[in-house]
Length: 298
Image (cartoon, rainbow, N blue to C red; front, top):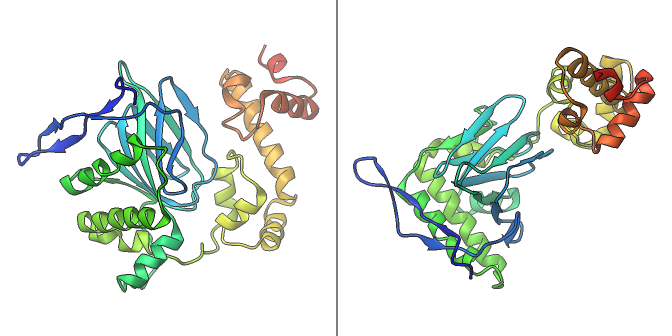
């Protein structure tokens, strides 16, 4: 164990004032670290990093241990500081920025609330949701002793990452987290136990808001509540061209606008516009406009 790293948990006393509990020493690990595969993750970063997360498939409960965490989607932008918790909605496109602060590394604990486990809990607890969830997709959870205590109980898993954790133990940790969430905010039932398929949303509005995310056409179809064939058919009717062609043209047009009118550097925008590499972006830009993006910026 590396004694240099620890987590001093933030606890509320009876007057609503934060104080630090005795430190729990952690193993120093790299990011990300799978503590319970597919369920519990411990992320550690010592340097600034911007991580583009294309598709958030599962509901997730995140505790920020230290540093700053920012989630930006087409609908919301939420930032957290140490000790804060965020419940993230499944089936979203988004970008997460992870950054250390002065004299403070970046660390998070993430509990993944996968749908098959949530279905199991709903059956066992006889939870029935009558209507589709229609609230905000991402919710800051008010701090309380129970949830903070729950995250403290995760510390042994982080301290002993080499130990074999059974599936049954993983399920128990998820159940505990879900029950404590519902204890803190009973209204989250429809958030957690909404198993309906995505409804058919406004494709034009969705694509204009999310074209910059680097995801497959299949994912775009899923997120708009369509089969792949239905998505391609509706897309052709609205935009007059196939999805892949439109995405390339739209991203390049946005890049040209940012470079020529906003003085943005190609190296600063290519990832945000869904290009996998700077060389791929430069090649596509030159093929479309006859010059490299650097030449246009000059």
